Length: 175
Image (cartoon, rainbow, N blue to C red):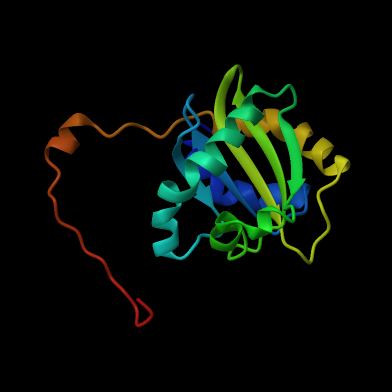
């Protein structure tokens, strides 16, 4: 379609969850160091917790595991939360509020270029992801890479130079 990947994700993730049954999903665009450069998630943490996430958990929980998955021979992997993980702050602050107990990961590439990681999630009431789920996701990875390969267009320098440091936020009664 030629659309930037981030514009496609809100429509694409629900379709992927029909291919591989999952409760929700997220896509993390990452640079070569494993830093998240952009993301789209179907569920988010409360704003205060989300703001703290990068300071408290990004390096230890996301970046190291992401780089391991990039280096691995297989682009698709799965796991479930362990008993030890349930005792950690990461589980209490991130996984439990998002109802995540089971993971299915895919490192998405466009050709040889790594774009990032697709994460599919299931809660505790659901079954673990299976080898068949991995196979199904593996079958669509090439198409996913093609769909997400078009980057967001950069902002024109002239637009940035003309930017005004003002904004408007509209809140409802819940904040």
